Length: 305
Image (cartoon, rainbow, N blue to C red; front, side, top):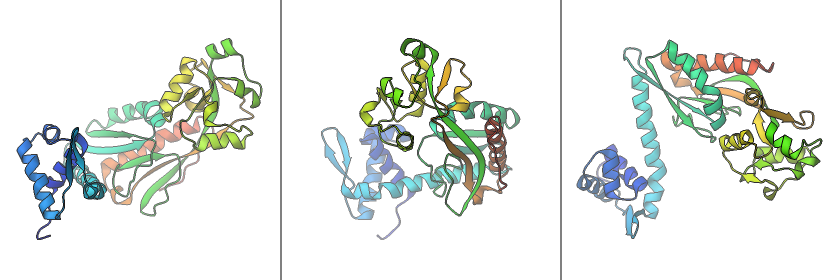
């Protein structure tokens, strides 16, 4: 290559990859279709390879296009992090902090915590990345992550908050119609809410004496929020955080002596961000609030940064 491709070329490439057409990419980026076409062509010339082929349903990436996709995505993440880092400068009026959390934590636990933070820090904008996958803090997919496993990367600042308990729950309406199980074996006679793909919960149930298969679940979904909604609707019996379930008096915990799982709660951020006042403010608020959430169940244990 005679010169390095500019970021705008990769940005247009990613937009075409995402939208499947030049016109769709132009709309999302607020550019003209000829400009997008020129960017893609220039990138192809610079890289010396074709990145897209035409198909009936639009543009499809070539093998080379797929090969450079993760690298272009990394550039996009880095560009977004640059903007967030600059905006977090104390001299600027608006700071942006991106938090990654699982579905349940993001929807059931964090809203009141973030509302309280907002009241004291209206100048800080919160971005919430809702996903059950582990956000890569090293690549700066997020600034701060609430995780249910211990972060392993040495360059991260991590604090253990404590642990939360998972139990089996059903709505009172379901139990009134179908009866209450008195043993783990009785669960096989009930409508079970579980996962579409095998995960830690299914393996834990097996260790507790239930040889569960995917076909044993009457409702299968990998979304923890959808599982909780089904429990609340009275569909059947499923797994839920005890701290979340206790907020709803209609939810009844089943077989607490036979079934109980624990997950550790950690907060982590990249060590390069600890000098940023907005990042530190969010980190400390989350640590304190989540500690209170866990400590209410008598399970908290903190260690300093």
